[in-house]
Image 1: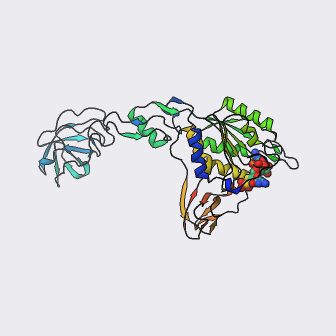
Image 2 (image 1 turned 30 degrees about the vertical axis):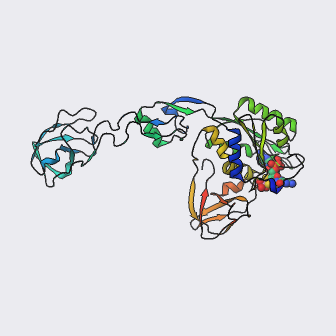
Length: 406
Ligand SMILES: Nc1nc2c(c(=O)[nH]1)N[C@H]1C(S)=C(S)[C@@H](COP(=O)(O)OP(=O)(O)OC[C@H]3O[C@@H](n4cnc5c(N)ncnc54)[C@H](O)[C@@H]3O)O[C@H]1N2
Ligand code: MOO
């Protein structure tokens, strides 16, 4: 579509279908794999499966402070034959009629098949008595109960958080293979923009989009490269995109994506190389004028200038493209399952991303003003309405999706 042609509703694409087609055509990939120390692995995306190479625990281990015993001795008095130390092999086997002191986590000695907790024995220092016969398997973890050789515990593409750090440390994976963070160049376009530190004159606005977009990209695990703003001229925008592609794995622009006389992003992208624009115009609100493009396998995303639209499209539509670059397989998105406290309206056949406030009685739609910057800060998240059904009735179950990083 050329600037000035206008949007033909028939040619607008359904967002999920458009992104799937984009990913199939462009195949964006993480820029590489690197190894980082465990101390630096939090938040990174694992690049190779973490597979157990041995039995964890390597030996049966007590889950109680108590005595290791043979269950077949029943309720007979047991002679205390020794003490098991933490971090050491048992001093010997437990023979018939014997018991051995064992701490929580201590290695079960040969012969023993149960642990009796301290509070369930009478201990005279020489021997122990029990009221109830222990059952085989009581109060210990068998060898390999946690992980067995070949178990794939954390898959490639998983974002490393606290539980994954625990597994990596247990498996001794201290040089962790992770995907290199993609570098994403962020460009704001618009003659009216001034820096956040400047005082806007009449008709000018502070450039907020680059900070919203940067925040969302950081939350997705990217390295953000801020490029200077571009004025609303095709040459300036094309030069800025070329700068971005020279030093980054993708470029995200905001503004100038629509069909006005000053909207030059589509034309600037189109002249930089193949495949160029893959999608221009989505059957969504907000964010209809979105441009999904690429130069080679490097994404160039043209988000609408309206602040709510720009952030919403990055989070609700373009996130799978960013995740293809970070290597993350599953979205780390906060979801609140609640009910609609008031109806959510949409438009038949369209996908609407409706900012919502979440209260004790459920989620309420906020009035969509895509030019506002306060709207998403006031919202607890957003609700997707459509494309199948264009209305969510009061009382119906809804999922409120959170914005990057909160
Ligand atoms: N004739 C039509 N006009 C418009 C259509 C349409 O289909 N036909 N779509 C509308 C929709 S929907 C949107 S969204 C906007 C998107 O327009 P652009 O992507 O070309 O964005 P701009 O015109 O450059 O800016 C729109 C608005 O956003 C403000 N803005 C831009 N960049 C920033 C920034 N970095 N920080 C803060 N605010 C920013 C800008 O000042 C404008 O107010 O087009 C509609 N028009
Ligand atoms: O639908 Mo645009 O994205 O006005 O805001």
